[in-house]
Length: 142
Image (tube, rainbow, N blue to C red; front, side):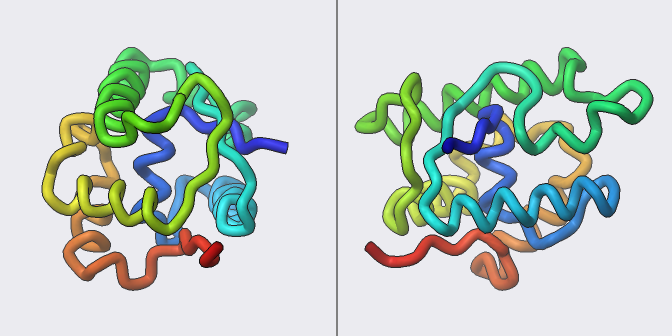
């Protein structure tokens, strides 16, 4: 199986510390983090993904908003530039080196344009500023 992620959720995974919109959202996100940590592949998708699932039946989820679509576009560009050796049109696996490269790019602001206007920015900045202490995503060594 693969975890279907929109590009900006790949960036969100870098600083995820167990907080979310609802308890169901957080439980789902925790399960996805566990799957990724266990080595499951990622498939980058356009539009709502496995992270969005718990929000799909709640009112008007922001998953289809223009601002989220733009965030995905910018995130995909940032990730494609950073991970040029990975074919992002195919499922891929995160390893410790790739995770470290993504987190370094986040910490240095290289991928921040994709995060502009996100309500979680202050939390993410705080997690990155702490050296990712408490971040949930851990990749087992190969």
